[in-house]
Length: 237
Image (tube, rainbow, N blue to C red; front, top):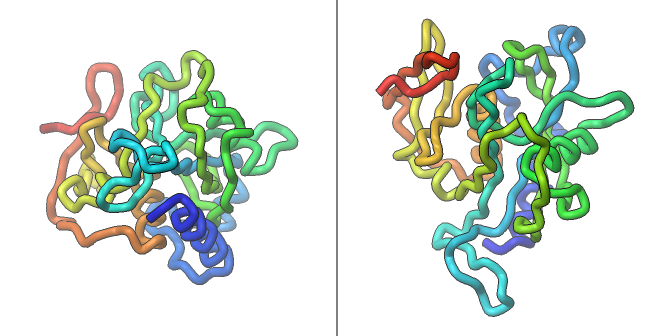
């Protein structure tokens, strides 16, 4: 799957989802207009790029892996943040005055991974979802970059690391787990880079399913989590 086909799939997902032809995201993040009216607006960017680390094609670009799937950018949030410290998430945040979801997602992406808006091709939006535990209604934005190496300085204090994750690894059934904590559970991805869970994992699962990339996995395979001494949720294994 090359960049053109991948971008076409992402655009098509946006069109189908906004037209109500994709099952809405479920669980605690399912959209409810009455609840959304009481929450602040936010946006996240799902930024895809060519799969890296596998050599180059004849045009001198990174070659796709055997699965033909792209890479996706994630960030690990600073442990000093009040909300979701230390967690792996998508770049994003609350809308500033006068911003829409796209402009906020692009600004936050620049601040968090250092990639300016001019390097991002916006492919569409998805319907909003709720992040009730942090008090936001979140609009996911889909994007693509051909210039992943053009990152400049990031905003200090917000993120520990930028992570570039293979989508092929996200759809590997072996990394998929049900995360358990207290009396709740969440979809999870247990990657070498760390555990992705909560809203981010639910959104990734939703998008991968909508694109037809997801694979069946054992939902009975669980990983418990606990708060460490710094208040960060970590696998209890």
